Image (tube, rainbow, N blue to C red; front, side, top):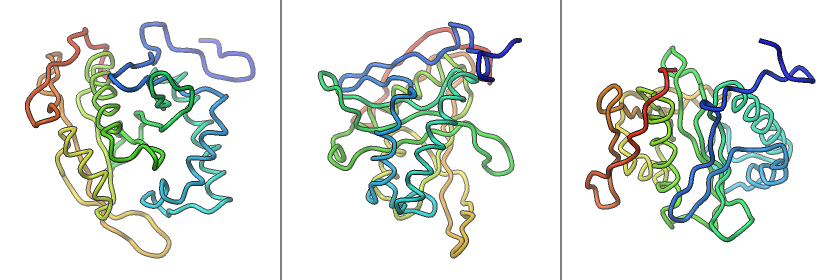
Length: 220
């Protein structure tokens, strides 16, 4: 297929484009080229990047990672039909976080990973779990994925609790590729209950919560 002007890859068909997702508190919209300033602020916040690999980030690395996230995120949205989503509270125009799916190498194979970042003023309000549920419902429903992975540093207790509430289970320990110290990072996997079936996420109190029953797209 022909590419877009400027060498950009072609857009995915409408049925495969990443839609905005709406939750009780949030609107999750696809990243745009206008989100550069927000990404820079996010990556220059040392509390936000504290538990990222090689974090916390200084000025130069933070700006570089923000630029890479913007460039790669926009490309992935065009190619894959999924990617970074900017988290916005209803009734407010300001962004409060970033969440989404991406493909990364884990345990010797390319996996689809869930990752997120949230501004510190919004921590402790359940927004990461709320947004994570919406992204996972989209992954197992619209995209028809069989598995979604996540990685988290052992000392990041807050994120570990988020992943546990989303139903992730530890499957292995891997060493981070760092220049100074090789750390052990837990690897989590979340598998679909049955191929093509309804996907059910843990409810807020540990019960089961019914979710989308849309017809899955072909497996990625």
